[in-house]
Image 1 (cartoon, one colour):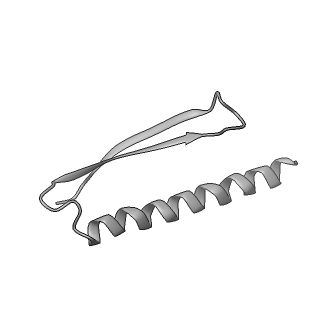
Image 2: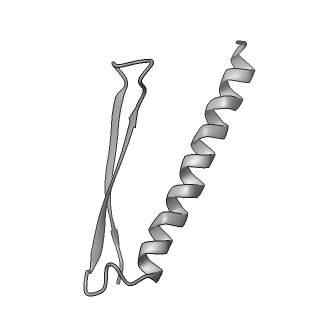
Length: 65
């Protein structure tokens, strides 16, 4: 695979992850699952069955008030 195609495939994957993750966070907020909380802690873990050494974790907290 050439560099441009690889870059585009990675960007497409990351866009899908970002869009669907945002939708899920917004869904739990709409449902009221976090009522009474001042923030929500989030963790995203990137792994691959094909590359067992890939274990990338991103954590953050989003203030809700």
